[in-house]
Length: 122
Image (tube, rainbow, N blue to C red; front, side):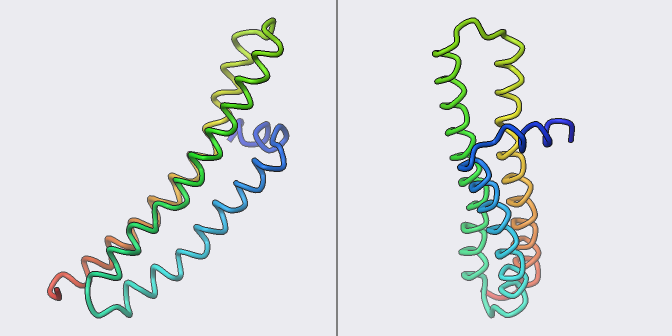
C-alpha cells in the first residue's frame, strides 16, 4: 500500500490510462463471467471466457514494460542517479502488474466456478 501513492503521484498520463483500462476491463468482465457461468449450456463459452480473463494481466504487463523502458531512458540520461532510486522506481513499476494479476485471478476463479457447475455437460 505504501507504494501505491507514489505510483499514482509519479505516473504519466499513459500509466494512468492503462491503470484505468485494466480496472475497467476487470469490472466489465466480472458480470459477463458470472452471466456466462450461469447461462451457458456447455463448457465452450466458459473456456473462451477463461482465455479472455487474461486480458487485464496482458494489458498490465504492457504498462509495466512501458514503465521499465521509461526508467531505463531516464537512467541513461542521468547516470548519477543512485541505485536505491532506480530500485524503488523498478519496484513501483510492478504495481500495475499486481493489479492486473489480481483481476485475472478473480476472473479465473469465476470461470473455474462455471466449469464446476457444468461438469456433467460436454
